[in-house]
Amino acid sequence: PPSKLQYRRVMLKLSGEALQGGMGFGVDPKVLTAVAREVGTAAKQGVEVAVVVGGGNYFRGASAWDGLERATADYVGMLATCMNALMLQSALEKQGVATRVQTAIEMKEIAEPYIRRRAIRHLEKGRVVIFGAGTGAPFFSTDTAAALRGAELDVDVFMKATKVDGVFDCDPAKNPDAKMLKRLQYSDVMIQNLRVMDETAITLCKENDIPVVVFNLYTPGNIMRALCGDLNVGTTIC
Ligand code: UDP
Image (cartoon, rainbow, N blue to C red; front, side, top):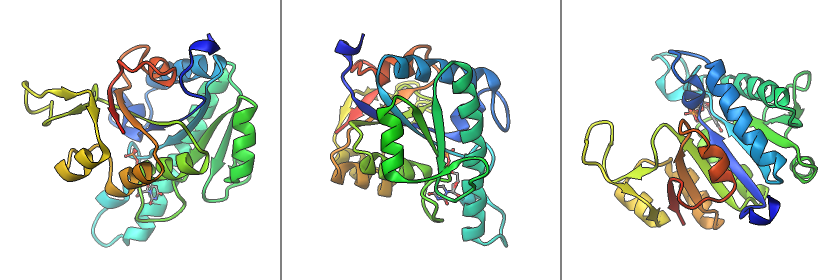
């Protein structure tokens, strides 16, 4: 019920890799549907949801081959995020949730261009707004795009959906004794190099006082719990 909502407006960052699920490449329809269902539930309860999607399931500028100019590779990466944005839009609308896609690189046959005040209006009307093409500039990440749009849209929290439960003191994939940290400061992340997100993104969050919640996308119900302000979910950085 709306009275229990802790957040008015949230930024949800979904990496491309998260949408990939069990597939080696592209999007796993099962994951996409599950994500759409939970985002839809939160939106129907009255949380204003902005989503930035990554593109790593298709292309990452930094991992392109030698000889492909970095800026060009990054533009390809940004186009990849737009494919994810369109598929997420379709999955959400299947759940009966009104959505808009806005892209930082204009492609107006398939999506609106990014217009800040228009995005805010959509959110106020209860539409989930999905942002494609990152910041529209090479040499940035979609985490930074999410922090930037989050600051512009004055969100209450930055939700970073990952494959792990939160931030650990060392890599949980390599170390069975890895301990999850429930609460951290921005400076812990920056100084200890905990690899939560790149420095540009975390700096933007810090400078704009946006708390970051890192949580596991694959635990059923987690997205909804996180969006609705359940503090037991994941690691909070503030
Ligand atoms: N990218 C970019 N500028 C941005 C956002 C993304 O150049 O503002 C490019 C970059 O090459 C990146 C790719 O798009 O590798 C896909 O985004 P990202 O790696 O952040 O996706 P994720 O890891 O979240 O799937």
